[in-house]
Structure formats: structure tokens, C-alpha cells
Amino acid sequence: EKDAKKEAFRKYLESSEAVDALTKVLVALYEQNEKPSSALEFIQQKLGGPAIYEYEKLQAEISDLQTKYNELLCKHEDACKELEELKNMHSSVSPSTKETNDGEPLKDEHVEKNS
Picture 1 (cartoon, helix red, strand yellow):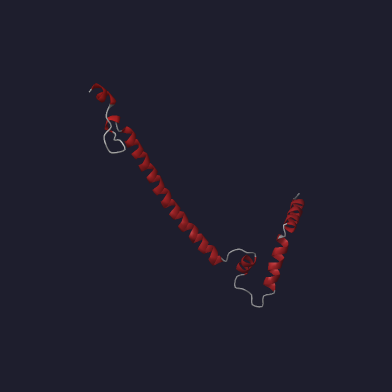
Picture 2 (cartoon, rainbow, N blue to C red):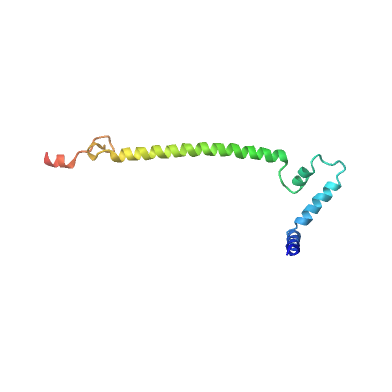
């Protein structure tokens, strides 16, 4: 069963061309006259991944963006609470004290009819 799993995995790597890509990168590393200080970084670059310093830079950027996101989310939540409070205040105002669009107080219909 283990051998069957290994064989299936090997076929998977070959069919996805991972073996060819790794072989080409390792051959390129072997053929370097001056070997790079980091073989792993060389392999990452050749496979299209970011260099270590680029990766660290991206990690720092992610951290900064997460902080900004959290700050904006808090501001948004505060604004939503404030809006809800204003809606509640507005809806709790009695009809006789509400104003019309022109700033004039609304007249209570019962008072007007009886006058």
C-alpha cells in the first residue's frame, strides 16, 4: 500500500511537470560558476517565488494593512452605532414637536380642527 501511494504521488508530480521544473532549477544551480549564498533562495527565485526579503516586506505590508483594516472597522462600527442612536432619537420625538421641511412646527390636527 505504501509503495502504491509513493508511485501514485510520483506519477502526479511527473504529470503536473513539477519534476521537470525542479530538475531544471537544480541543473541551473549546479551550472552556476559562483554558487549563491542561499541555495533555497536561488530555487525560490527560479520557481517564481519571492525572495526572502520580498517575502518579509510583504508580511510587513500585510500586518500594516490588517492594522488599518481593524481601525477602519472600529470606526465603521462606531458610526453605525451613532447612526442607530440618531435614528432612535428621531423616532422617539413626538409628532406634535416634529417640524415640517420648511422648519415650521407641525400643527396637531386635533388642535386645528377644534380651533
